[in-house]
Length: 308
View 1 (cartoon, rainbow, N blue to C red):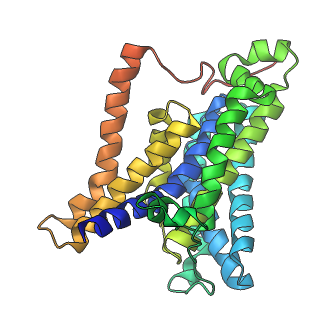
View 2: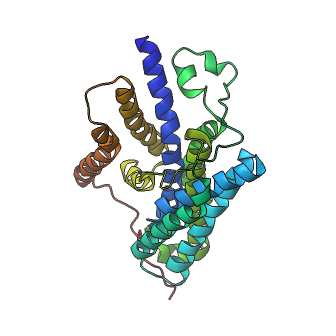
């Protein structure tokens, strides 16, 4: 029975970490190009409500996923225009979008509270691999978006570190003036990465409302967008580390639920605080470690670029 409980906990950790993983991957792309996007929370909420709205109207989770990605991409396009074309302060623009996305999702989703999703999520056991002891039930009895993350993460790592477009991306994030002098279109790279990052954040929101908890609740992300920002720092801007970190954060969340189910004499408010307390601990620990290892963010992160 203890083994079954452990398997259930680990499987939930993977599922709970998936929305964080998608949002963190999007933010990694954005920050690698030199743009800080603090609007992840708003983009996730916009994706969650638009995905749920379209899925309920069309009875198609696929249509909901597409709508969620478009909603996140649309908000990200605003951020791209403000920060890349108008060169507005990136922190102010991101915070404004976080607030705007939160308010917009509450307005759109007001009539969706309590509405049931017509087509619920169905786990899809992976043939063969799902029968492997321990590993199979944890990783290969999940839904399709979890499987998609298994493919997306190594592709993102390979694309960033082993391809010419990835080299251009890293060059723009480190020194946009030099990249421009070498013929790289800095504005095009930043626009593409910001919008792609917003679409991934919207996808993370859609996972929450269509798969993880198939319903719409106001502010259902509960700060996951901010945790995703911390996860990017924890992952040192690496997609592979982001996957491990997302599952770790998901495990902390799942552990809180498991403790409540077991009826332990622990305040439920404290258990809800666990992911955020862990986020603070990770940021403090990373700061100390990065100073020792001299590891930092992309050099041009947060700095607007103006072609001379």
